Image (cartoon, rainbow, N blue to C red; front, side, top):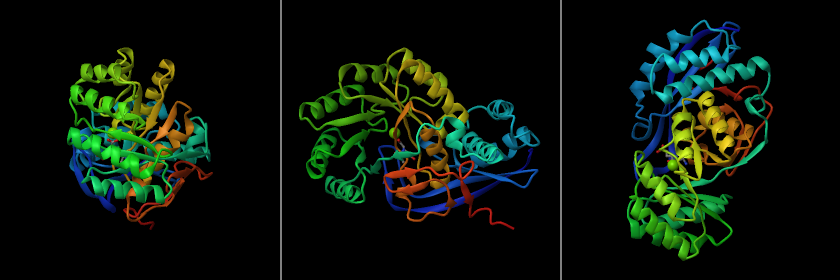
Length: 362
Ligand SMILES: C[C@H](N)C(=O)N[C@@H](CCC(=O)O)C(=O)O
Ligand SMILES: [Mg+2]
């Protein structure tokens, strides 16, 4: 089975409410999608969001990287030659991890279809079901409390609360949310680099002293401030999860070697796809460090690929795969079943997505 064609399209999916973090506000998902057609007529699909503030990737750069660099590099290759394809994909252009992830997942999708097996089984097959959190955007405190209560009503037992805009407000906000949702709901916080190391230590120490029971804190400080990240990890007992500071397997090695974080957030868009993410899993497993499988603001296609990896690997013990739950509509048919907080894998081969609106079947 050979790669016969690679086509690029775009999709737009409205969000239920604007998504707001310390880094950005977004009203709708505007993603790039890819369709790889094999010489047998079989198709594989991929999706990538232009998350410029985190990955540096824009709509234009993703389209250009796929069309002008990746497509010519892998066209005609045997789909069974995953290693050869991945070598070309990762060496034909530097960085551009979202474009690489988009094509990587379409290749794995086709590979799974070629084998007649769902991807999560090909990659490790550890579990069939995942539990995701739901993100609570940064807003006035009363709105964040209201959104938290509505998430719990929808069945979410884990909330990922975005913080990092104002120190004191963050403490007040978490206290108000904990008070409203009670002690049985898990609260994780994500500062998206919004604190300094000193602020992070002060805020997390107060949250600990007040017994607000924070499961973990994601990326408290700037990407480059690895010394600050390590200082926070050392100073507080709340587990610290490196997100924006870990893109590649090399980053993971450095963070774990220097004990700069307790946990790692793996995202396909940072790792350049499943191939790179598997390397991070291997490093984390070697060091005995658990991982979270996260996503950018992605819709069901890309999140399905991430869900397959999360289901495959035992070292991925947490999931932040709430993209589909943040969307107003689901433009795709097939994939794992996204049942609010529960993601249930099924037996469809590959990623399991059956149709992508950007490529109507002829
Ligand atoms: C959507 C997911 N829950 C999430 O918060 N992902 C990122 C931010 C993604 C973005 O800005 O698109 C994260 O920081 O974990
Ligand atoms: Mg994060």
